[in-house]
Image (tube, rainbow, N blue to C red; front, side, top):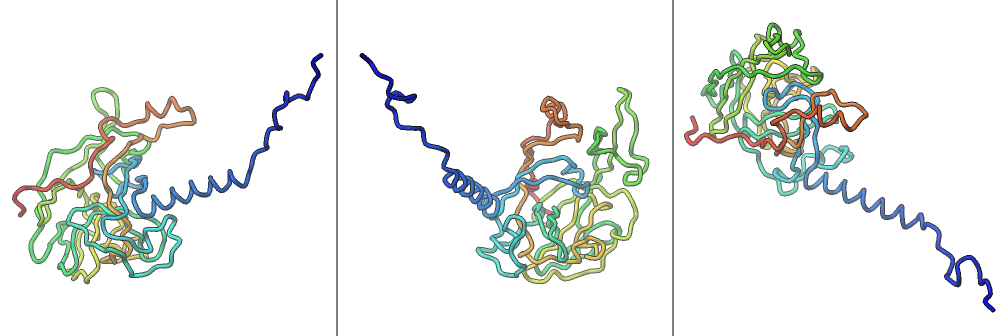
Length: 285
């Protein structure tokens, strides 16, 4: 005659969830992510038009954290106090796109290196004069960008550049110049308006500093602009440079909603995996 030995048929009772173990595992995973973001690489989202035409609002990219060493700015969320100390410090190259923290706030800006330590730099009529020589700016064919929620081609920013194409869609036609720095680094810029930042008095970049500018020269608060006007206030210390932009992972036009099906439709074609290191001409000017 068989008997009933309980609901578990002789098996030991199931153990409950060990929340301490679960929380410890979650904390370790979070620490690993923060460490990776602080020391190796982190994602970055382009929030403004200051680096057009090379970076658009809605671009997602990867920033490597180690090329110039580590400093207070490397830590995620900028939790460390400001300091001029760097570990394994290195100097950027002309044309590198870097993230930087301005002197009076904890935001991340993204700009391009146009002058290195001990360089003399001025801006005259919108053209960089580096160590007494004008940096070449060669006109190129205008760039046509589709107007979308992330790139509305606001007439206040781009007067007269928005038009409706034969296909019924709206486009922004941007005047393009190709700028080439002394090491041969070459990239496109936009400069279509006369404005105060088109002229900047000659300045010597101190040791351990770099001079940064946005590629959209008419809409960039960079080293040309005072800190009180949301600029970088001149050359910036390398200890405030947090990494180098490497490549675009994806770009979205701003039409995404809660429905995941909208994400694919909002993906801009041709921008994913675009490399962000500047091309180098074989014969530098």
